[in-house]
Length: 363
Image (cartoon, rainbow, N blue to C red; front, side, top):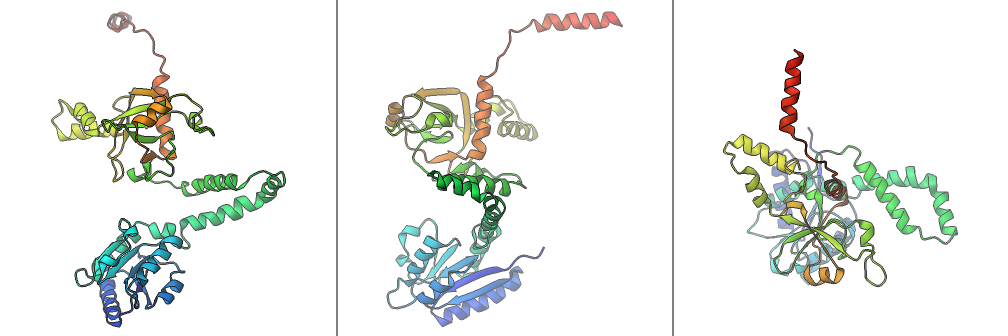
C-alpha cells in the first residue's frame, strides 16, 4: 500500500540548520520509504502566512529574530486557530511557553536529531489524527455533507423558527452533531478503550456516567441517576433530591477472585475474557484502563443515594466522564439487573428424577 505524502513545515531562520533538515529528509525518505513535502519559513511574518495552510506536522525554532520569542508567537497562533501537531527544536528550550508543556514536545539542538522528531510526527500522522482534524479532514468533509444534503433542503423550516422568535442555534448544533455521528459511525470498526472516556470533562456539572471519587478514601463511583433527574434548576438544585451512585471495584481484586482455583493459562484467559465481556456476572460492568482512568468494575449491587449537599461535601468534581456512546449500555444493564422479576425455586432434584423416570417408562 502506497503511503500518502507527509506535509511538513519547518520554521527556522538559520540556513545551516535548514540545509541539515533538507539532507536529513532526503535520507529519511529513502530509509523509511516515506514521501515528505517540505515547506520552509525563515521569519515570523512568513510563518504566520504559511500556517494558514494544512500541514501534518510543524517543527519550530523559538528564535527567529532579535527577541527570541518569535517561535512562541507562531505556536500560540497555531494553538488558537489551527489543528496540527507541533514540535519545538531550539537551542534555548527553557524559553518555551510553559502553557504548552503537556501538549508540545521540546527538543534541544545538539542533543536530539531530526530523525527523532520526524519519527514522532509521523507516528502521530499514522494514527489518522491530521486526516481527521486537518484543514480538509474527515470532519470537514462530513460537515459539508450535513450542510448541503441535510440542512439546506430544510432551510425554510429553520428560518420559520427564527421568524417565530425561537432560538435555533443550539438546536442546529444538536441537529448537526446527530447527523455527523450517523455519518462517521456508518462503518464503525472495533472500538478502543480511549473512546470510552471524556477527559478532561467538558463541564463540572455531574451527568449520568460522571466518575467521581470520595474525598476521604479516594474510592471511585459512577453517577447512575437518569439524565432527566440531573437537570439543574436556576437555584442550583437538581430535579431529583438524591444522586444515585455505584461503586467501582478495583480491577485486580475482581480478577483475582474470578481466577481463584484456575491454574492453566488458557482457562485463565477465557475467564478474563468472560470478565471484560460482562459475562461473568450480571452485576459487574467492566470499565477499561486508559491513561486518564485506572478502570475497574462497576458493581451494580454497591449503590448509594446522597442528597446534593452530602454529595458536594464528600465528593470531588468529576475528572472523567463515560461518553454517551457507552453509557447507554451501562444504564441498560443496570436497569436490567434491577428489573429481574425472579420466581420461587422448584424442587429441581425431585422434578428431574420424575422426568427421567417418565422418560424411561415410555421406552
